[in-house]
Length: 168
Image (cartoon, rainbow, N blue to C red; front, side, top):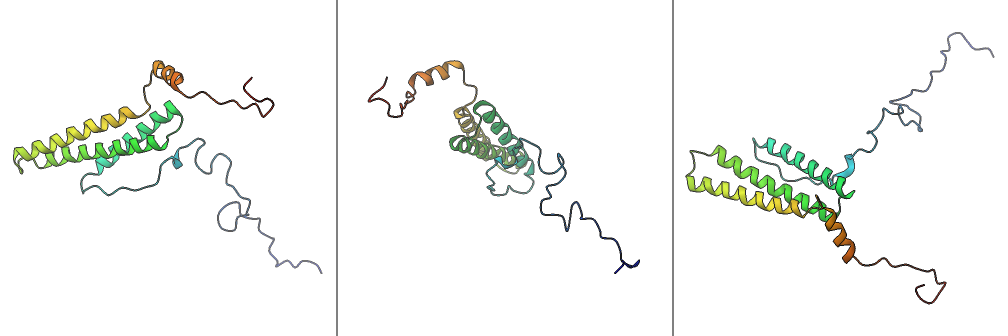
């Protein structure tokens, strides 16, 4: 039976969007994140929200966290559990210092000077504790530290695959 002239030709399969083939992966080099990105490097946990008008503190904390994470990754190659905990604690301490300074700055003239001084003392203590946490991170180690670590580390065990009764 011959084709009728009213029959429309078949449409080609769409290249993207609804009805795409199952093996579709997007355009090469244009789909998905760039190579070697760190999108999945964060833990995904969320903290409590800051008070109204303190969004700038959140942005500063994110910038500080990224800086510390990049520095540890550059120095060590990975962020371990201890490094992540130290970075998180340093960020929380810095947030406390920033909030204390924010309250002191915005309540000047409304509160007695003794209370304002307490805010500034709290900010100074939080900054000092933050500096101690950052100092505990494996950053800026000199060659002397690596030599001492090598001297006092446990020797690597060698296995001889059972070919002899003891070390060669």
